[in-house]
Length: 193
Image (cartoon, rainbow, N blue to C red):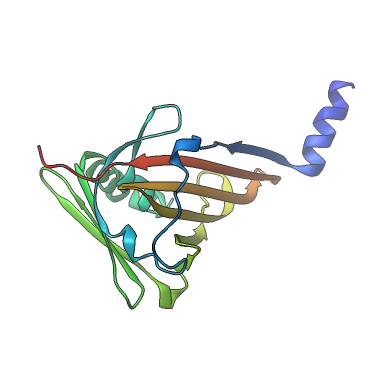
């Protein structure tokens, strides 16, 4: 196929990227003793430093912050938040019976707290998996985009297993573009050293 045909195809149908990561079989949940609609068992304190499927490092607090603010005027504030979340040693999850997930990222200097609410359609519990939904404007730096992200949280033994799914669609310099990513992480219960 000629190079011009490839360029025309990309311009006509847009640019896309897909990255899907599988989790190890050992991360699969065993038969649950709780009701499939009971997600309260995810409440607990977990280490912020976790592992990906191939053993690479992941940070729970950064994953749980689904902020899609790309406004350049907020860059300093967003960078400070990102560093505070990266520096956290533990992350406390509290899911109340009325459907509010409160997250407290505790660091050596600073703690950050935020929440997601079922009444705002940000939370859903199905088959023992708590899903956090968030969508918003992903525009910035010559890109007009819409993002739709979700986190699937599930207790496997004492560990918290998280699937972070990110979807985006938009335009880069008038060229349609889209992306999909699915990443996995496992986080152990926090043990204070």
